Image (cartoon, rainbow, N blue to C red):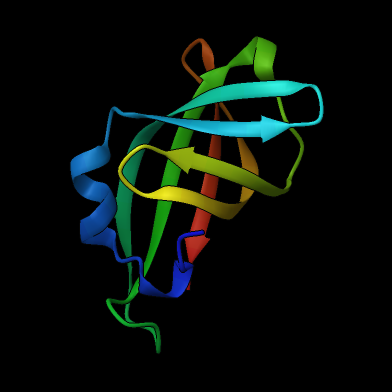
Length: 97
């Protein structure tokens, strides 16, 4: 399992446009990393940042902690918050502070 404390914005920036696999009780959902953005200074190494993912509207999920997998990063747990429609998709955000 990937240690979230060691992840920094520069790890995610090259992954924009790539697919992350989210697991739910009813099956897997593909999320595409749409945006990785700095949020400012914090006590966290590398500062705070947010990740915005997109998924199809047919794959709507609730706000909660989910197991996520990416081939380069491995398995991790991310707390995702729905932030609304983005074009034909739905957007979700994870914040690292």
